[in-house]
Length: 251
Ligand code: IP8
Image (cartoon, rainbow, N blue to C red):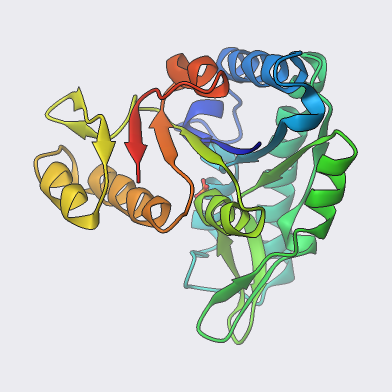
């Protein structure tokens, strides 16, 4: 069983304070992940878990400062390093929290392996992730800045990594732990979204435009996966890791 879990940057960091980890949320998430990675049932060797985390107040802060997005690139190596180094600091904090909780976590930095080319297609080699899983480790990847043919370097979001890994590893389940308990329709969690039509119907009745756009984009990407995906909040994380279906099921 292969599970991919995205821990949202808005869960792990304090969004409005540059480079500030939300220590209590991080500890909560790490405890739940460590438990799932080490429980006897199913045996850890039959239970491959890959963690991906977002940028929160680390990557996004520096990306905005340098005007770098998923489509606006930079050729300034200092800007690339500033964004990447911030993400490495957050990744270090996440891996350390997982390790403290007893999880065999190891860092994987996309800048050193992934790139975009052609029309923006992503190549993300997964051999190292597979080897880590084979040896019982829990790889921890993160949203990053990556080299982009003809644009210098652009942002690679954690969501894109989740989708790429989902296909490449033929994942059985995908979980996205976000700041909200699922796809919301007038404050109520929608149990299941099965098509783009459902997304539009539901998110049409939702709150702020930027939040809606973010959630709609997330849902659209997750619908492209073969595996069922779930969007939930920290409250739902232990249930997801136990094989239950918290929040909204996508697909
Ligand atoms: O928070 C973005 O990842 P996301 C990573 O998953 C950077 O969109 C470097 C801003």
